[in-house]
Length: 332
Image 1 (cartoon, rainbow, N blue to C red):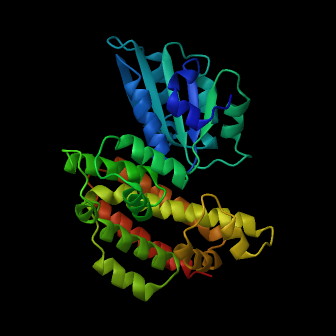
Image 2: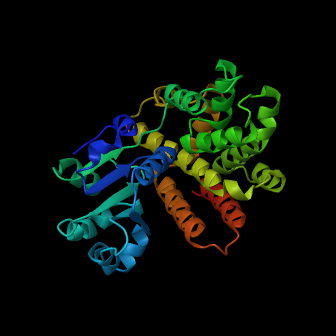
Image 3: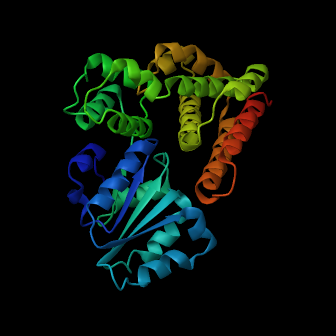
């Protein structure tokens, strides 16, 4: 059963009869927002988070969690992250066992041939919602709604935030939190905004990402030495890389139709900012489908380590990833 994400944002109760639900797509920020909505709508609930990799390594873990009823909480909610088609067998196994539990599955982009996506779309008992990338209008609406009542919030400020954080809902949410913490008197000072949002650092990382994906070793090495990696932004850095690789993957698929590369990029949704078009054209020449597949496997491994290994130097993981991508860009 298919649900529109914008409808669920307004009323999550529409899926209250779905014991198992799939959220998929490239919009990580929207998926995080749904997790928050689920948590906020649930009281006296035990929430368990699992990664698909854990479930595949231990086939009984999900089955046991569903069967083990909570003694203190009214029900149990299970979040399953980083899912793909490999998890279908486990979902089918628990589908008849669920009583007072809810399972929410979160996946990246799933194409129309995906067995997981098809399974949920055809189901009459379970639900699915695509989390597509936001456009400029929806992002501005999010900012305006969350900063409602703040003096100094005008169209110029909205454009300023959007242009410097991109159409990344996760990043926007982080920056809004900073703004709300800093301007507790609800009076926005435009002159303090640039320093507050660390826009220079973000721009430097985007330059580093793009030079690495262009395979420019000299500039990549220089930017690696000059760029400040902030600890709290490691997930943002990885998401930034992932989004660009997924965009190159989309372009690679469209190129099979042999359309002009500029026409392809001009037709992308959400639209590419004009200043980024030459960069993406060069990157699309460097990256074919095989290289992109390898890059996505590498970024997936890095994401698992970021989220599961608390002792590892996470900034080094990102830096090593940058170096690997730069090398892969130049591979034959």
